[in-house]
Image 1 (cartoon, rainbow, N blue to C red):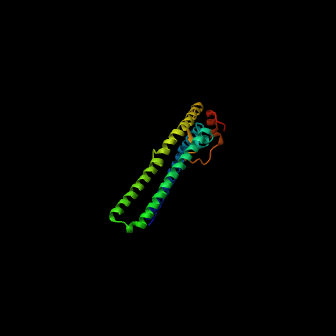
Image 2: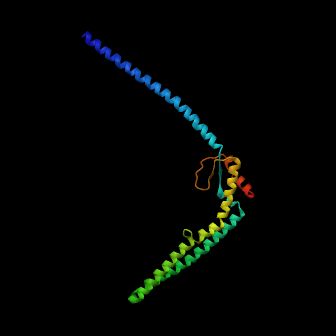
Image 3: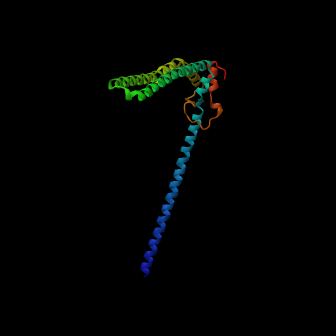
Length: 203
């Protein structure tokens, strides 16, 4: 009985020793991780701080709206768009009337006349879709007019931004008008007015 009790006591001692060793190793691991994480965080925040000194923010929409030549170009594009849209709307109204007339008269038409009227409707429908594509489609008339009127002004702004970036040593410049969500930015980082001064435009 005594031998059995002694054996049981030794086993408990061994288990306690193992538990202490596990706790000690865990503490050592946590200490090591803390020592490792701290330098990484310091490097990370230092890098972020350095990065913050090498970028700026602009608002090209704000800049362009301050340029008189852009205002004139935008007005011309809006007038052309309204004119071409009216042209399409008039043709659509005429086509709608053709459909109504055909629906009302088709019961009195021969098969030959039905076919002729349906072909006319099909052709008018195609003409209308082609006109919409020509005016407002990809690389259509409005796209070409915008390229001709607005792109030179956008290039002008880009060149001014590039000069400022080189002069101040910015690594990159964010445009907050292009869908980039800026939750907060120090107003000192916004260089839009400086771009306007480079362009010779009053802010």
